[in-house]
Length: 301
Image 1 (cartoon, one colour):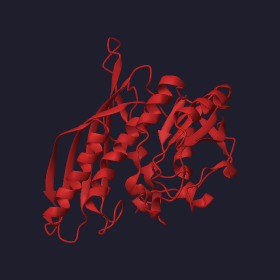
Image 2 (cartoon, one colour):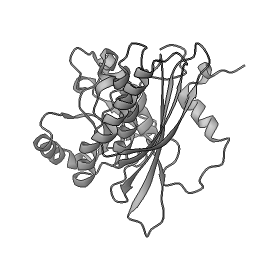
Image 3 (cartoon, one colour):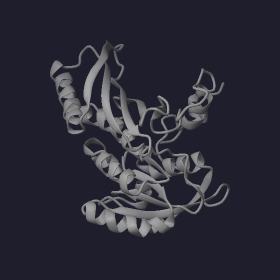
Image 4 (cartoon, one colour):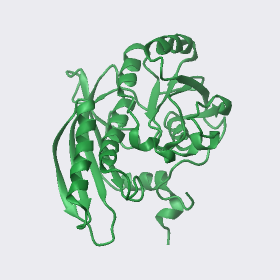
Protein backbone atom coordinates (compact mmCIF):
# COMPACT_ATOMS: atom_id res chain seq x y z
CA UNK A 1 0.00 0.00 0.00
CA UNK A 2 1.38 3.39 -1.01
CA UNK A 3 1.32 5.96 1.79
CA UNK A 4 1.79 9.72 1.96
CA UNK A 5 5.23 9.09 3.42
CA UNK A 6 6.14 7.20 0.23
CA UNK A 7 5.36 9.97 -2.27
CA UNK A 8 5.92 13.32 -0.53
CA UNK A 9 4.05 16.60 -0.67
CA UNK A 10 4.57 17.75 -4.26
CA UNK A 11 3.63 14.37 -5.75
CA UNK A 12 0.57 14.20 -3.51
CA UNK A 13 -0.66 17.60 -4.68
CA UNK A 14 -0.18 16.65 -8.33
CA UNK A 15 -2.23 13.47 -7.84
CA UNK A 16 -5.03 15.19 -5.93
CA UNK A 17 -5.65 18.07 -8.31
CA UNK A 18 -5.99 15.56 -11.15
CA UNK A 19 -9.04 14.12 -9.39
CA UNK A 20 -11.24 17.23 -9.30
CA UNK A 21 -12.77 19.73 -11.75
CA UNK A 22 -10.46 22.65 -12.50
CA UNK A 23 -10.75 26.01 -14.22
CA UNK A 24 -10.00 25.27 -17.90
CA UNK A 25 -8.33 28.65 -18.38
CA UNK A 26 -6.91 29.81 -15.04
CA UNK A 27 -4.84 32.96 -14.70
CA UNK A 28 -2.93 30.91 -12.11
CA UNK A 29 -4.15 27.78 -10.40
CA UNK A 30 -2.78 25.10 -8.07
CA UNK A 31 0.99 25.36 -7.77
CA UNK A 32 1.50 29.11 -7.45
CA UNK A 33 1.60 31.10 -4.21
CA UNK A 34 -2.03 32.16 -4.73
CA UNK A 35 -4.78 31.16 -7.11
CA UNK A 36 -5.72 33.96 -9.52
CA UNK A 37 -9.24 34.70 -10.76
CA UNK A 38 -9.36 37.00 -13.78
CA UNK A 39 -12.68 38.90 -13.96
CA UNK A 40 -12.06 39.81 -17.60
CA UNK A 41 -10.28 42.43 -19.70
CA UNK A 42 -12.53 45.25 -18.51
CA UNK A 43 -10.98 45.02 -15.02
CA UNK A 44 -7.56 46.45 -14.23
CA UNK A 45 -7.16 44.04 -11.29
CA UNK A 46 -7.27 40.29 -10.73
CA UNK A 47 -8.47 38.54 -7.59
CA UNK A 48 -6.06 36.51 -5.47
CA UNK A 49 -7.27 33.57 -3.36
CA UNK A 50 -5.27 31.77 -0.69
CA UNK A 51 -5.76 29.18 2.06
CA UNK A 52 -3.26 28.05 4.67
CA UNK A 53 -3.27 26.16 7.96
CA UNK A 54 -1.18 25.82 11.09
CA UNK A 55 -1.14 22.67 13.23
CA UNK A 56 0.04 22.42 16.79
CA UNK A 57 3.25 20.41 17.04
CA UNK A 58 4.05 21.14 13.38
CA UNK A 59 3.97 24.93 12.99
CA UNK A 60 4.06 25.90 16.66
CA UNK A 61 4.74 24.22 19.99
CA UNK A 62 2.49 24.07 23.08
CA UNK A 63 4.55 26.72 24.87
CA UNK A 64 4.56 29.15 21.93
CA UNK A 65 2.91 32.44 22.95
CA UNK A 66 -0.60 32.48 21.51
CA UNK A 67 -0.22 36.04 20.23
CA UNK A 68 2.80 34.95 18.18
CA UNK A 69 0.81 32.01 16.80
CA UNK A 70 -1.93 34.42 15.72
CA UNK A 71 0.52 36.77 14.02
CA UNK A 72 2.19 33.92 12.17
CA UNK A 73 -1.10 32.42 10.98
CA UNK A 74 -1.97 35.63 9.12
CA UNK A 75 1.57 36.65 8.15
CA UNK A 76 2.12 33.39 6.26
CA UNK A 77 -0.80 34.26 3.99
CA UNK A 78 0.22 37.90 3.60
CA UNK A 79 3.62 36.64 2.42
CA UNK A 80 1.90 34.68 -0.37
CA UNK A 81 0.07 37.80 -1.55
CA UNK A 82 3.41 39.62 -1.57
CA UNK A 83 4.92 36.90 -3.74
CA UNK A 84 2.27 37.57 -6.40
CA UNK A 85 2.78 41.34 -6.34
CA UNK A 86 -0.58 41.83 -4.66
CA UNK A 87 -2.25 43.05 -1.47
CA UNK A 88 -4.35 41.18 1.12
CA UNK A 89 -7.93 42.23 1.82
CA UNK A 90 -10.41 39.90 3.55
CA UNK A 91 -9.71 36.95 5.82
CA UNK A 92 -11.72 34.06 7.26
CA UNK A 93 -10.31 32.20 10.26
CA UNK A 94 -11.29 28.69 11.36
CA UNK A 95 -10.02 27.32 14.67
CA UNK A 96 -10.38 23.70 15.79
CA UNK A 97 -9.23 23.41 19.39
CA UNK A 98 -9.06 20.90 22.25
CA UNK A 99 -11.79 21.39 24.85
CA UNK A 100 -9.21 22.05 27.57
CA UNK A 101 -7.73 25.05 25.73
CA UNK A 102 -7.72 28.06 28.08
CA UNK A 103 -10.02 30.87 26.96
CA UNK A 104 -7.17 33.32 27.57
CA UNK A 105 -5.04 31.45 25.00
CA UNK A 106 -7.72 31.79 22.35
CA UNK A 107 -8.19 35.49 23.09
CA UNK A 108 -4.44 36.06 22.79
CA UNK A 109 -4.44 34.11 19.53
CA UNK A 110 -7.00 36.53 18.11
CA UNK A 111 -5.10 39.53 19.41
CA UNK A 112 -2.14 38.31 17.35
CA UNK A 113 -4.41 37.79 14.36
CA UNK A 114 -5.70 41.33 14.81
CA UNK A 115 -2.18 42.74 15.12
CA UNK A 116 -1.21 41.32 11.73
CA UNK A 117 -4.46 42.21 9.98
CA UNK A 118 -4.17 45.81 11.16
CA UNK A 119 -0.51 46.06 10.17
CA UNK A 120 -1.23 45.05 6.59
CA UNK A 121 -4.56 46.79 6.06
CA UNK A 122 -6.74 43.67 5.99
CA UNK A 123 -9.90 42.69 7.88
CA UNK A 124 -11.59 39.62 9.32
CA UNK A 125 -14.92 38.85 7.62
CA UNK A 126 -15.85 35.44 9.02
CA UNK A 127 -14.75 31.96 9.99
CA UNK A 128 -15.69 28.91 12.04
CA UNK A 129 -14.93 27.25 15.36
CA UNK A 130 -14.83 23.55 16.23
CA UNK A 131 -13.53 21.18 18.86
CA UNK A 132 -11.10 18.35 18.12
CA UNK A 133 -11.05 14.84 19.65
CA UNK A 134 -9.14 14.32 22.91
CA UNK A 135 -5.41 14.21 22.32
CA UNK A 136 -5.60 15.99 18.97
CA UNK A 137 -3.61 19.13 18.17
CA UNK A 138 -5.02 22.59 17.65
CA UNK A 139 -5.60 23.60 14.02
CA UNK A 140 -5.85 27.14 12.71
CA UNK A 141 -7.03 27.46 9.11
CA UNK A 142 -6.94 30.71 7.14
CA UNK A 143 -8.72 31.63 3.90
CA UNK A 144 -8.18 35.02 2.32
CA UNK A 145 -8.82 37.15 -0.71
CA UNK A 146 -6.68 39.91 -2.12
CA UNK A 147 -5.93 41.56 -5.43
CA UNK A 148 -3.17 42.62 -7.77
CA UNK A 149 -3.23 45.05 -10.64
CA UNK A 150 -3.03 43.19 -13.91
CA UNK A 151 0.29 44.77 -14.85
CA UNK A 152 1.90 43.98 -11.49
CA UNK A 153 0.86 40.31 -11.16
CA UNK A 154 3.90 38.01 -10.91
CA UNK A 155 3.83 34.22 -11.27
CA UNK A 156 6.34 31.45 -10.63
CA UNK A 157 6.11 30.15 -14.17
CA UNK A 158 7.28 33.07 -16.33
CA UNK A 159 11.08 33.05 -15.89
CA UNK A 160 13.56 31.95 -18.55
CA UNK A 161 17.10 30.53 -18.80
CA UNK A 162 19.84 33.11 -18.30
CA UNK A 163 17.95 35.15 -15.73
CA UNK A 164 19.53 35.98 -12.38
CA UNK A 165 18.13 34.61 -9.13
CA UNK A 166 17.96 36.97 -6.14
CA UNK A 167 16.67 36.69 -2.60
CA UNK A 168 15.65 39.29 -0.03
CA UNK A 169 16.85 39.33 3.56
CA UNK A 170 18.68 36.51 5.33
CA UNK A 171 18.14 32.75 5.22
CA UNK A 172 18.20 30.15 7.97
CA UNK A 173 17.43 30.38 11.66
CA UNK A 174 13.69 29.81 11.57
CA UNK A 175 14.02 26.98 14.07
CA UNK A 176 15.62 29.43 16.49
CA UNK A 177 12.45 31.54 16.54
CA UNK A 178 12.50 33.65 13.39
CA UNK A 179 9.41 31.86 12.07
CA UNK A 180 7.28 33.49 14.78
CA UNK A 181 8.15 37.16 14.29
CA UNK A 182 8.92 37.62 10.59
CA UNK A 183 7.57 40.55 8.60
CA UNK A 184 6.02 39.61 5.24
CA UNK A 185 7.76 41.47 2.39
CA UNK A 186 4.57 43.10 1.14
CA UNK A 187 6.07 46.61 1.00
CA UNK A 188 9.20 45.41 -0.77
CA UNK A 189 7.25 43.27 -3.24
CA UNK A 190 4.97 46.11 -4.22
CA UNK A 191 7.98 48.39 -4.73
CA UNK A 192 9.58 45.69 -6.89
CA UNK A 193 6.61 45.21 -9.20
CA UNK A 194 6.28 48.98 -9.62
CA UNK A 195 9.96 49.67 -10.41
CA UNK A 196 11.74 46.43 -11.42
CA UNK A 197 9.02 43.87 -12.03
CA UNK A 198 10.55 40.38 -11.67
CA UNK A 199 10.11 37.78 -14.38
CA UNK A 200 9.04 35.30 -11.67
CA UNK A 201 8.73 35.39 -7.89
CA UNK A 202 7.69 33.28 -4.91
CA UNK A 203 8.09 33.34 -1.15
CA UNK A 204 10.41 30.95 0.67
CA UNK A 205 8.23 28.94 3.02
CA UNK A 206 9.71 25.44 2.75
CA UNK A 207 13.38 26.39 2.41
CA UNK A 208 15.46 27.41 -0.58
CA UNK A 209 16.37 23.77 -1.24
CA UNK A 210 12.69 22.96 -1.75
CA UNK A 211 11.36 26.21 -3.23
CA UNK A 212 14.06 27.10 -5.77
CA UNK A 213 13.55 23.82 -7.67
CA UNK A 214 9.81 24.53 -7.64
CA UNK A 215 10.25 27.96 -9.25
CA UNK A 216 12.69 26.58 -11.81
CA UNK A 217 10.41 23.65 -12.69
CA UNK A 218 7.34 25.89 -12.99
CA UNK A 219 9.27 28.00 -15.53
CA UNK A 220 10.66 25.00 -17.42
CA UNK A 221 14.24 25.73 -16.30
CA UNK A 222 17.15 24.30 -14.39
CA UNK A 223 19.30 26.39 -12.06
CA UNK A 224 22.76 26.92 -10.64
CA UNK A 225 23.31 28.18 -7.09
CA UNK A 226 26.24 30.13 -5.66
CA UNK A 227 26.32 28.74 -2.12
CA UNK A 228 29.06 31.16 -1.09
CA UNK A 229 26.72 34.07 -1.83
CA UNK A 230 23.85 32.88 0.38
CA UNK A 231 22.90 35.64 2.88
CA UNK A 232 22.98 33.80 6.20
CA UNK A 233 21.01 34.74 9.29
CA UNK A 234 23.32 35.32 12.26
CA UNK A 235 24.48 31.97 13.62
CA UNK A 236 23.13 29.98 10.67
CA UNK A 237 25.05 27.63 8.39
CA UNK A 238 24.62 27.29 4.61
CA UNK A 239 22.84 23.99 5.25
CA UNK A 240 20.33 25.73 7.51
CA UNK A 241 19.87 28.51 4.97
CA UNK A 242 18.97 25.88 2.39
CA UNK A 243 16.84 23.62 4.51
CA UNK A 244 15.35 25.19 7.64
CA UNK A 245 12.34 26.66 5.83
CA UNK A 246 9.94 29.37 6.99
CA UNK A 247 12.22 32.22 5.93
CA UNK A 248 9.30 34.00 4.21
CA UNK A 249 11.71 35.99 2.07
CA UNK A 250 11.18 36.63 -1.64
CA UNK A 251 12.93 34.61 -4.33
CA UNK A 252 12.86 36.33 -7.72
CA UNK A 253 14.23 36.03 -11.23
CA UNK A 254 15.32 39.04 -13.31
CA UNK A 255 17.15 39.62 -16.60
CA UNK A 256 20.85 40.07 -15.80
CA UNK A 257 21.06 43.46 -17.54
CA UNK A 258 18.55 44.89 -15.06
CA UNK A 259 20.24 43.55 -11.94
CA UNK A 260 22.85 46.31 -11.33
CA UNK A 261 20.20 49.02 -11.52
CA UNK A 262 17.90 47.08 -9.22
CA UNK A 263 20.62 46.55 -6.62
CA UNK A 264 21.52 50.25 -6.60
CA UNK A 265 17.91 51.35 -6.27
CA UNK A 266 17.13 48.68 -3.69
CA UNK A 267 20.00 49.65 -1.39
CA UNK A 268 18.78 53.26 -1.44
CA UNK A 269 15.15 52.28 -0.83
CA UNK A 270 15.70 49.49 1.73
CA UNK A 271 19.13 50.08 3.28
CA UNK A 272 18.50 47.70 6.19
CA UNK A 273 17.39 44.75 4.06
CA UNK A 274 19.85 43.07 1.68
CA UNK A 275 18.95 41.87 -1.81
CA UNK A 276 21.44 39.25 -2.93
CA UNK A 277 22.14 37.54 -6.27
CA UNK A 278 22.51 33.83 -5.50
CA UNK A 279 22.57 32.10 -8.88
CA UNK A 280 20.89 31.88 -12.25
CA UNK A 281 18.39 29.89 -14.25
CA UNK A 282 19.65 27.61 -17.00
CA UNK A 283 17.99 25.45 -19.62
CA UNK A 284 15.79 22.60 -18.46
CA UNK A 285 17.76 19.47 -17.65
CA UNK A 286 20.97 21.39 -16.96
CA UNK A 287 22.31 22.89 -13.74
CA UNK A 288 22.23 21.14 -10.39
CA UNK A 289 19.92 19.28 -8.04
CA UNK A 290 19.00 20.42 -4.54
CA UNK A 291 17.58 18.15 -1.87
CA UNK A 292 16.22 19.01 1.54
CA UNK A 293 13.83 21.64 2.82
CA UNK A 294 10.51 21.01 4.51
CA UNK A 295 8.12 18.33 3.24
CA UNK A 296 5.06 17.60 5.36
CA UNK A 297 5.04 13.94 4.32
CA UNK A 298 8.79 13.24 4.17
CA UNK A 299 10.01 10.02 5.70
CA UNK A 300 12.94 11.83 7.32
CA UNK A 301 12.76 15.42 8.58
